[in-house]
Every structure is written in structure tokens, then in C-alpha cells.
Amino acid sequence: MTEVLDVLVVGAGISGLSLAHKLTKLSNNSPLKILVAESQNRVGGNITTVSQGDFIWEEGPNSFSPTPELLKLAVDVGLKQDLIFADRKLPRYVYWNGQL
Ligand SMILES: Cc1cc2nc3c(=O)[nH]c(=O)nc-3n(C[C@H](O)[C@H](O)[C@H](O)COP(=O)(O)OP(=O)(O)OC[C@H]3O[C@@H](n4cnc5c(N)ncnc54)[C@H](O)[C@@H]3O)c2cc1C
Image (cartoon, rainbow, N blue to C red; front, side, top):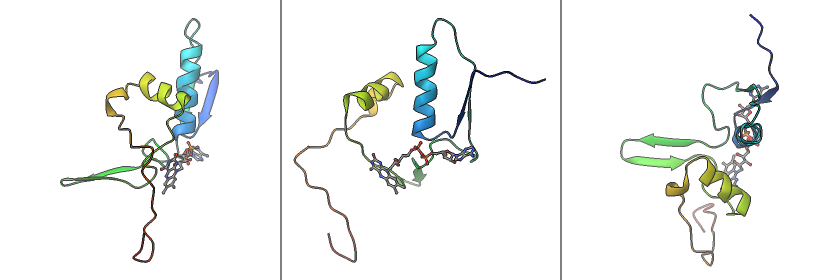
């Protein structure tokens, strides 16, 4: 049977997932049929967290600028308890060729 959708979101990275989340919230009174299509076997796109043994690390982004919009999104999707704020005054380094 063919299913008729209101919105097809292509890609389940942060852009596609946050768009689908926003549309779902906006269409609260008359819910939209939204499908997020993803070509990989996991969601997240560039956002890749790997756990192995006692270790956990990020292979993509590990931080973001805490803009009001992003903070609101994080809280909306239930990540409030997981947010860790860094000291804004701390410098950032890139480790390259054995040097910072
Ligand atoms: C190593 C690395 C470190 C980074 N560090 C930071 C950081 O610290 N802070 C920060 O703010 N940003 C960082 N970024 C940038 C940030 O990760 C990206 O801007 C963001 O994740 C992009 O999200 P997106 O949803 O737009 O795209 P993507 O994450 O690329 O998601 C696109 C999704 O669409 C899927 N897709 C594509 N074509 C199709 C198709 N035809 N059909 C179905 N699915 C499809 C892909 O498989 C993918 O899952 C980093 C990026 C990398 C690579």
C-alpha cells in the first residue's frame, strides 16, 4: 500500500532530525505525516559517538556554541541533564604534528 506523506526529510543528521522535531512540534494540532529517510544504518550523520571497553569518544563534533536556539533544542529533546558547559575563557587547541 502506498503511504502518502506530508513531509519527507532526507538525511537523519542533526539538520534532518531537528527539522523533523520542529515540524512535529509545530503541527501539534493537526499532526503531519513525516518520514526521515537515512541511507546509513544509524542516525546522527557526522555526529558519531563510539564506546569501547571503558572508553567513550567522539569521532565527529564534540562541542557546540551554546546559542539560545541550540540550548532550547537540547532541552526539548531531553538532553538537559547531559549538557556540560566549558569555561568560556579556556583556549582551544588543535594537536598537529606533535604540537598544540
Ligand atoms: C570530524 C568533525 C568534527 C566536527 N566538530 C564539530 C564541533 O565540535 N562543533 C560543531 O558545531 N560542529 C562540528 N562539526 C560539524 C558538524 O558535525 C556538522 O555541521 C553537522 O553534524 C552537519 O549536520 P547535517 O545534519 O547538516 O549533515 P550530516 O551530519 O552530514 O547528515 C546528513 C545525513 O544525511 C544522510 N544522507 C545523505 N544523502 C542521503 C540520501 N540521498 N538519502 C538518505 N540519507 C542521506 C547521510 O547519511 C547523513 O546521515 C564537525 C564535523 C566533523 C566531520
